[in-house]
Image (tube, rainbow, N blue to C red):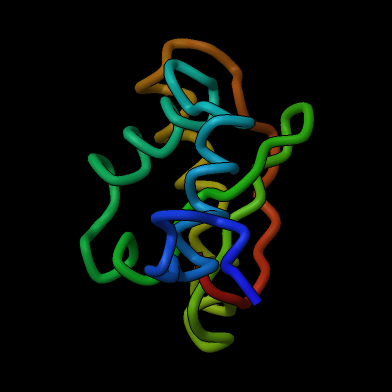
Length: 105
């Protein structure tokens, strides 16, 4: 039987396909979450930013994905300070609360 796709003998990993689709469907550009990530990475220690990143915004609630439950617990104590820092740097009341979830980003 003849190959239906001429010239396409090389396989592409699904991760590459999904990354391209997501990037095209949800471009970050100058979105609010993108700006908050920049502030997050500039204001917080690299030991936190390497293991926790903002992944979603819903209204004034910021969802942060954290690699370990131990760090999630520690970040709960810093939540008020982080909210104040982000709002101070952005110049407006962007975030009222932070919710954390354990996972990968």
